[in-house]
Length: 123
Image 1 (cartoon, rainbow, N blue to C red):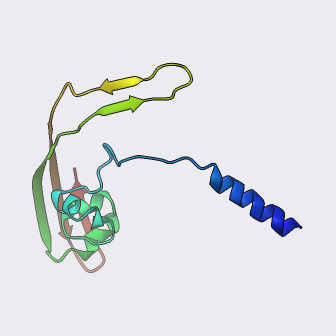
Image 2: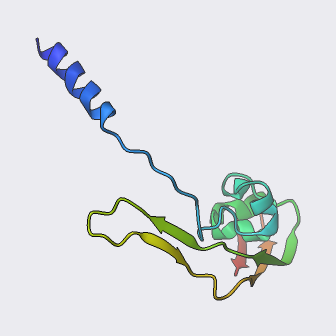
Image 3: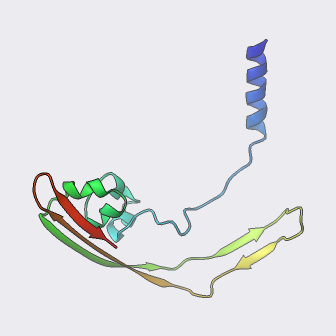
């Protein structure tokens, strides 16, 4: 009998789940232009000195003994929200596009000092 109740409870919980719609918004999925182009793979695979921002241990895997990376990302967010079905009556559409675009600079430096020491800076 308890198995039937557990299964029934689980089935009822899955029947009332609501849909979630989201994006990663302003949270970037990579710290450099290369990482953004590869959907944030820099967390596991070091390919530039800026990967130290998401995984500091990746500095030891860089192929160059010394590396400097510079770049600029063009960011143009589309900020809009729609609220409907709110019980308090604050339904509507809201826009926040006062500033249309931003330039986001990136700078990284890494140095492989020895077999046991690597250091760097990621901005």
